[in-house]
Amino acid sequence: MIHRSTRLALAALAAASGLGLSVSACSSDNDAAPASSAPAPPPAPSTTAASPADIAKEKATTAYLGMWEDVAAVAATSDWQSPRLAGHATGDALSVLSRQMYADHYNGLITKGKPVNTPVVQSVEPQDVPKTVMIRDCSDATNWLKYRADNGQPADNEPGGKHLINAEVKLAVDGSWRVTRFAVEGTGSC
Image (cartoon, rainbow, N blue to C red; front, side):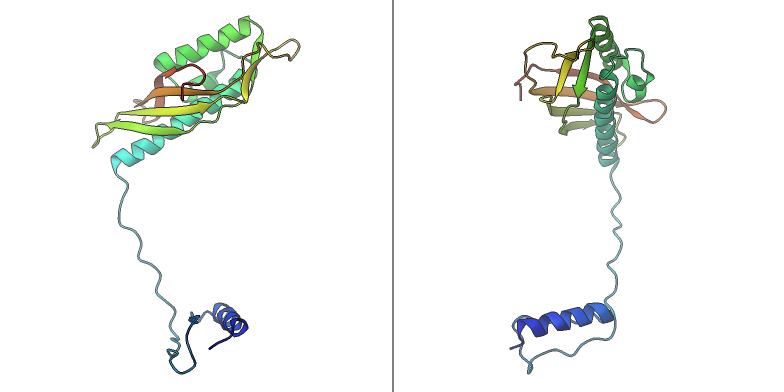
């Protein structure tokens, strides 16, 4: 039986010399196979292309996550006029976000931290040429809270928590994906 140190030395030698030698943990010197001097061929490239639905899922999810990154960045100053809000949102979604930022600005509030999102695609329509993707998320806003802009104190005594979010993401005429509407449920809804 080949000892462990001998196996390790042979494996190291094979790796260093590029010969691709293999050492069996239970082989004896009598039944060892001769070493091949030709390197193993590389694996064949995958010929499976992503489906239109898979591509749409990926792009819609990226847009959804991008929207929340934008919102977290803008909420740090409550700049309701920031063009960044339109980067991944449009329609009702953009309107809701702008109004919320304006309300926070008007009330002297900012938001610190950022949400932790875990989006899951619920549907893609139509499958062959996707135009709409529905996403469900259990967003954790535990560390994404509102504070008074003037003194940095918490805006209220309410702790953050998890919120169920349902979102619609659509293919725009320019080829980008944008969140068109979303609904956020109350704390503890997921």
